[in-house]
Length: 345
Image 1 (spheres, rainbow, N blue to C red):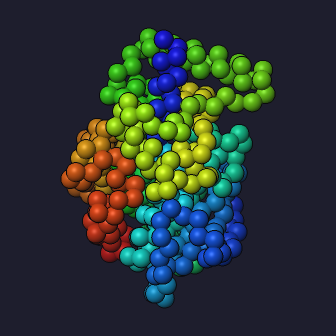
Image 2 (cartoon, rainbow, N blue to C red):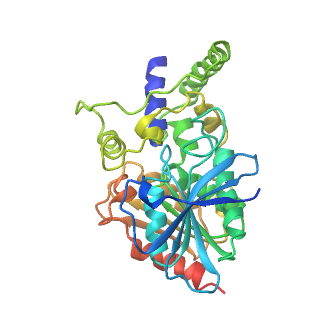
């Protein structure tokens, strides 16, 4: 029984101050997507409220106007880095006339925080607000016109940030996971209280062992090779993170492991408790064929107001909305942020 819980943890986890800026070396393009000739990119760093230094890529249109611009902070998927899907979204939206910031969350990628590869519903929500802090103080950004994009697990954290941070004027969640729900209840809420208690027992025993051993045990990650027996969504993740399509050396899902005990905080601190109080605009976007579609549909049911919209993308899987330019509806995303950021009074 305990072993089955650790298999569950592995599946869940794999899916799931001032500024210091320097110009990124254009000769060292390390992204999983092609570099655009329509934007400029700078490596930036800034601190969150807990003093952790976050590192991001700031994308600016080369033909930007002289007036202050609308801006968007982007993060996710859960276990990914800014050189993957979030960077693609950021670069594409910069091509469409926004200043954008793709950043690595705390404890991951190039961002700070020890120990490495830890997830926290509180700190990862705070990371979005820290990105808003940074953007609000950029000379080219209108601080009244800032939005966010959260992908996969950071869709949930992004929506949680929008419930807290009134400076966020528009939020897009793409292929959203509620990491606290799936950690506490399993997929489709299949884990009951007894099973959850047994999971917590095993994880708390691991805490004792971690302290004794002086290091944090790692959760299992994606397999190095596929047998073909894996669920389709695991094969989809593998075909993104473990192949040339989406592999990046800094990505936990490509080249690392979450700590096993990260799951404890996700179990015990549910997000989205106050999502029904979000007054700013929200676009909830998910793939028609995604195994995770119910997270977005259920989250949308709780939202209130005429400025909330659910978009189900025809024929798209969960991972299609990471990088499939034939599936990601960037025209719709642009019109959403134009309406609620650029055109907002």
